[in-house]
Image (cartoon, rainbow over all chains, first blue to last red; front, side):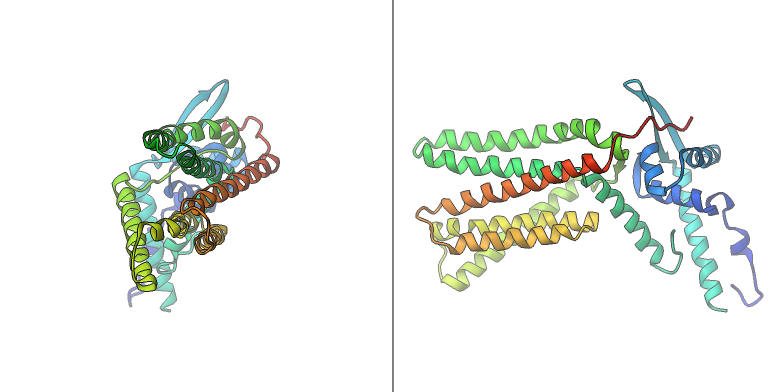
Length: 106
Length: 222
């Protein structure tokens, strides 16, 4: 933080991403090209309902793309980050670095 | 959870990626098909001995095995994963290195290993004959496998691959030092032995995987 105690980096934290469950979802999608619902559920430890709820919010924000199809008779959902989502995630990481670096200087 | 300290966020994202890679490897298919490939190539040398003099058949068999492996193994593995792996642990399309970069890396590593072997043999024996080269081909093969296994260990953060690499290298060394009657016996035994080990290990992992991860009931986001 600046000498004037500028809290702009904290104020700029992306609240949509900052929620722990959504942060986990985006982090896992960031390191893969795409993943299905079951994979994300197992990796994040979220319940199906929880994951579905956060997934909807991220999709509404345009951060993830959700493709639904049928494999045989079973519904299958694939998720991937959009380019906007990748950018937002990277910006979030940069912003949090600034925040934490600023805090560590106090 | 991601740590935001300087350079730590990259480290933890790397761990997440490694975990995803490790997840995809636990069905044992990589080991099974690596084993089949090694056994297949090992049989080339058996065929070569049996059909000594009918060189074309031996060479043709060798190339047929390699071509089959390159063309069909990925498709066969994918089909098996769709049937056995994805319904149990889900599916993730992992980032892949560009094919050119991968090919360049493999070629560079193989060249490096060959150069090191040539220099080492020259220093130790003062000469490089064809017989000497064939005799030490198990060690060369072990070194080649080591590269691939270290790559897998780095990708998946699974230290077992380092252990397998060391095992493969030591096995190669032992079979190189042991004096077989024929120059080809060492490499034949090595390929068949390591192939069997890989196949067996893969099979054990597969059976364990089936037991550990039952097929998930229909999990949807509805």
